[in-house]
Length: 203
Image 1 (cartoon, rainbow, N blue to C red):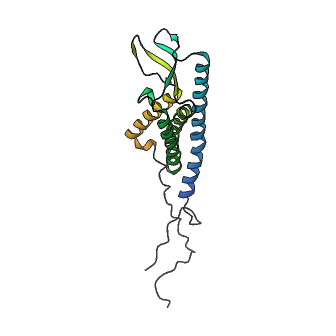
Image 2 (cartoon, rainbow, N blue to C red; image 1 turned 135 degrees about the vertical axis):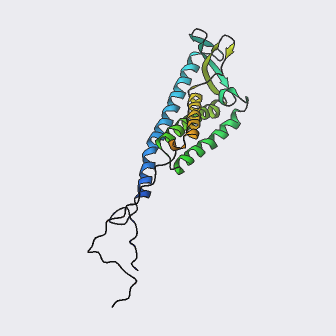
Image 3 (spheres, helix red, strand yellow; image 1 turned 180 degrees about the horizontal axis):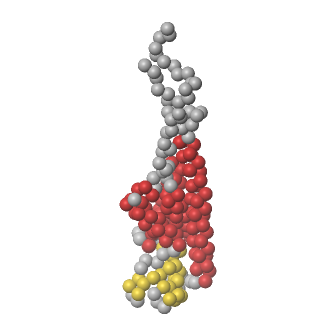
């Protein structure tokens, strides 16, 4: 009986799948880090503009009373939930930031996943800086009709909310965050001049 030749992805017999996966992972890091840094920069600049122009509680109408800029001090979590726990949430944010980076490093995901995690990381860092530096988060976007108002929020909150929306979409379509499909293994054509080792005794 003749032994079959082992499958390979090339004439050299080297499986290219690990190298391809590593290359794809490295290409995702610039998007992930650049997006997170951009969110943090925009978040902190807008907060500085608000705190430099307004006193705490002061507001300015942008579109009538529907959209207003107000200097809010949030000592709780996202959208003002669980107030007066800024330090605790600051420490939790540190852990969350580490988990996001670690997950991105280990996940064999797509650019969609890097986009989602980049938004989440930028938002988490933006609010974490406020909590650790000020003891509260600066919120300034106030939207509503008359007395019916939404929670005051900021750029970091918006990034976090959008990332959660993207994760919900990914839960419906898992292919958006899964890694690339394995490279099909190609068996090279047999060369009639190749010598194959057989288990038949020499005659």
